[in-house]
Amino acid sequence: MPVANKHMEKAERYLQKGKLEAALEQYLLAWKEEPHNDSIVITVAELYQRLNRVKESRECYVFLYDKAVERNDGQKVVELLRKMQVLGPVEPSRMIAAAQFLEKARPDLASEQYQRAMELAGQQNPEVELQCLQGMARLQPGSLDLHRQLAKTAARLGNKNVAVAAYRRLAEMLTAIGKWKEAIEAYEQICLLAPKDHAAQIALAQTYLTAGQPGSVIALWKDIAEKSEDREALGLLAQAYLAERQLEKAEVLYWRLLEGSKEAANALLEIAKGYLSEGKGNSLLGCSGRWTSI
Image (tube, rainbow, N blue to C red; front, side):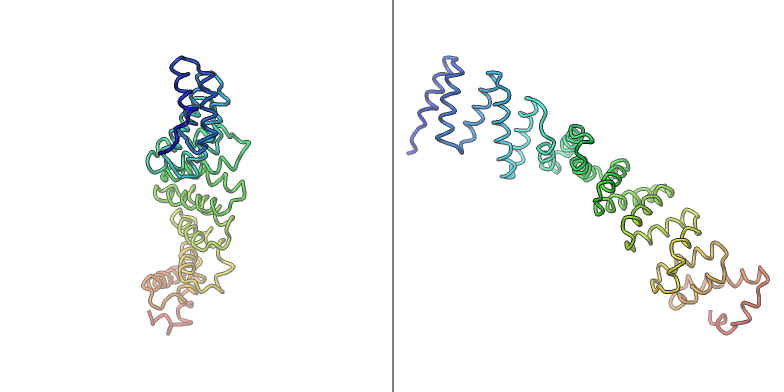
């Protein structure tokens, strides 16, 4: 049988007599004998609190809190966080750790902890601000304001991956609700941060066309059109040339895209009509054999 901790027996007798200081002394001795007994630490913290020794009480809870984080004990983390907050402000890093544990079970409380941590850190610790914004964005994936703030903060801190992901999500949400101008701005930011992000370039060109800005597509891609083999990019550029009534340039691209493309065939017919309406029938006669192929 395990040997009873005599210091705890003495401490309990002192408590019954209301001798808090003496009881605390015995509990501290008991803690030395059983350093892994968390229930003793909780009792010590409560006694410190009853004696208005806030600093020492808080240190006990912080000790237990950090152990709970290491053990991945989310319930204990949240419980101890509340006890610590009664005693005063909690470090943002510890609030963030608690929020991460709360994300699935209590997203409302998690968001609240992220918000409080961000307010405590202020602008003095932008890395904490970024971490909090990431957490809040996970919890509110449909928030335009949060993703806009996250994207700008990440870009300011040079965290390209986070910034690009946030701008992409923001652009997708703005596109879904028809806010083309703001969606374009978001996609343009991605292209500035990641010039080789082909998906962003395609999405940007599509949004330019939807927003009635074909000239912007031409400005984006005109220098690489002749070398590109990307049918999707060439198709968007061809649409832009056609919308701008630059029929000759549109024609060149649509001939390249004709094989297997009904859209290209229809566009070429539209270009042919355009030549006739502009009195440029010679453009058709000069290569009549090719035109008859469609």
